[in-house]
Length: 425
Ligand SMILES: O=C(O)C1=C[C@@H](OP(=O)(O)O)[C@@H](O)[C@H](O)C1
Ligand SMILES: C=C(OP(=O)(O)O)C(=O)O
Image 1 (cartoon, rainbow, N blue to C red):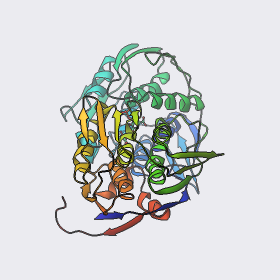
Image 2 (cartoon, rainbow, N blue to C red):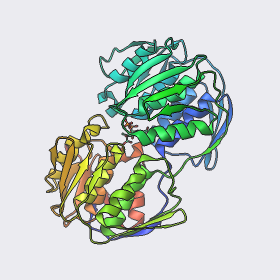
Image 3 (cartoon, rainbow, N blue to C red):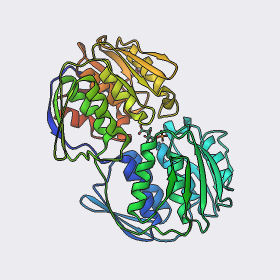
Image 4 (tube, rainbow, N blue to C red):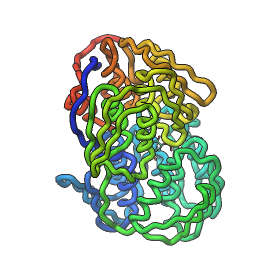
């Protein structure tokens, strides 16, 4: 199935889905807290389902209520395997967590996660004395025989923050203290989110400049109630839709969020869109849009919606941080260049910079490459395109935002859906 989006005027109010990053962390923390926790406003998407399945396999009982999840956690026997679905975060966060258990456990996944390297997880765990096997030779599956033996490790943060998130969640449960020396950490705001969330569950970690983490052992996760915020990563394409073609108000947004992708506001401001807050309601409205420069090194998931924005600005926009895109659901730098070329936009990549000429969008056929953020970016690009854009493999939005096309339609997006029975682009 593919979807066709045509030029449309945007006008409306929405609440974006709850944060999948916070949701997966909250599920892990609730599992680590022996007792009853409640997650309010849970996120419903495939990555959240994967994390829910993992904690259930690890022995937590999850009960769905109206707009909450009750999680009863208890010490239980380790399963033989866990399945992370397509979630990079669940893979990298739960690996160090399951390594607290001495039993051997296999970690598997499906789809795009099978093309994402696991070497840095293995190296990091081995530095802490964990035995790992990797029948997938650099990719999933991996087998972990847990039991941390070392109190010190050097961690390479250059590929991202997710593995460090897992270590920061797991290591406070050791008997011993641990010191981590982290080099070249990327996606830093995600670590702030982790530290804030575990603090809510009673865990304290100190660090100097995101390089030297002192993790006290013998800490205890306290069962608690936790409310998941609206997702700034899912909000980003909706805000770009407002900036390109009308006006959109997003409700229940936290202006003080730790989420990295709140930085979309900086880019919208730089290009000249109108931004207004009223309490927790955020309104973005179209104005004349000019090219902008933006550093997305620490908020890499903003690249796709920012490319959609830049493609309709006057002039050439420059986004830094291309090296952060290689190991996402697809190689996002390469795929953005290839798919936007099909629509008339000749993106250039020079070193770590992506240069996007504005004003060349023609419309046409493009595919998501099974990447939810690319599918959403193509959809909002279409709102201001002279001819419609058809998007193949658009169902992949279910990874983070299953209702994306329904919501886009609610605010005026001209979304038509139809079946197609043979090979597509
Ligand atoms: O911790 C998280 O929730 C995430 C961290 C980022 O990954 P990296 O830390 O690998 O850059 C981001 O791209 C991902 O979508 C979610
Ligand atoms: C990269 C993403 O997620 P993950 O790494 O958790 O699969 C994303 O949601 O854009």
